[in-house]
Length: 104
Image (cartoon, rainbow, N blue to C red; front, side, top):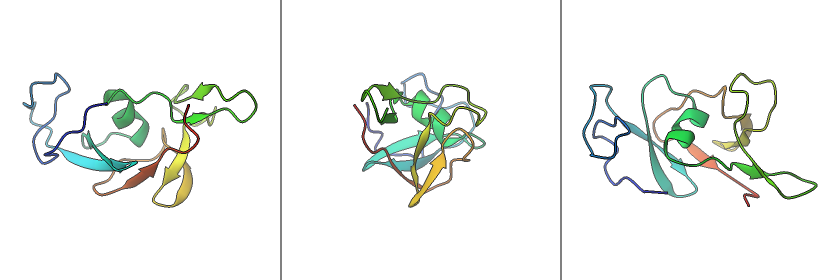
């Protein structure tokens, strides 16, 4: 996982540090700054940053992450600003704190 140092820069996901005019902001994910675009959910921002495992399954300890992206499966649950939330339904916001617990 890369850690961007300047989330005020525009982010377009191609890794060159440039942008596409969408602007940029960051989430705090387990201490790392993860950029997101306006209108993205937390799950989409994490996926774009290469973070696919958000938690472990309780029984087998297997990795779990966003699957349906519409709130039906609840596989994307994480602590967001101190509350357990479905990241696929949670709009990303500047300075939001996300804690991914029990990851494999």
